[in-house]
Image (tube, rainbow, N blue to C red):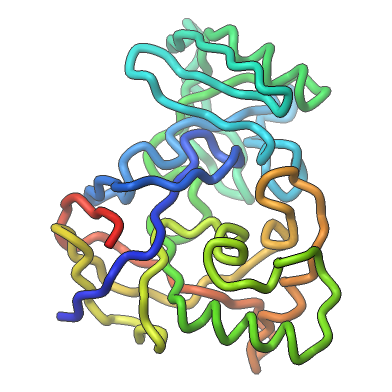
Length: 252
């Protein structure tokens, strides 16, 4: 069993919105509690919105206030509203070719999202894990970030200022659940103790163009994707993981 220091924790309450840093998170057998608990749905197409196709989503900051949700738009305006399952809310929506179990919500926040995105969307509560592309936890190491940073500098990469810097400037683009302090990447099958929790490392994570988006503005202003290509052609960075022993994980 390996115990590692936690450099950063983060999650997104609503799929695709700003991935926000946390001082601590709770892990259960489904993954981080509160991570991607909600999503936005195009009802006409019965599809969950994908971040890569709707980059303006990352401009929105969502928070759970217990009895209601709060959403802050780029102009600094925060809207708080309750959510409740609609009478006809139980549906299955397409998410990357698989069925995601959702419950459409009656909430004033749907109008906020629709106005921001310029298209009609509906807030929905998602079944745990159904709008998560791979494993419930994603993990990256400071060593991998440092090696990527060095490779970007060596290549003459001309991305935005500080795009290749070590945490936090670079790691937030990968929207990882956990960033750990380690020179080496853990091998699949390795068990790590993070605070009270134990996780088991899975396979390397395949990446998409979301990592090229500015994590604040959603602007496509980097070319990180072309720098994470493995020898077999896959675009890999970081690892998936599953929870073996639930518990609290805190920074440090």
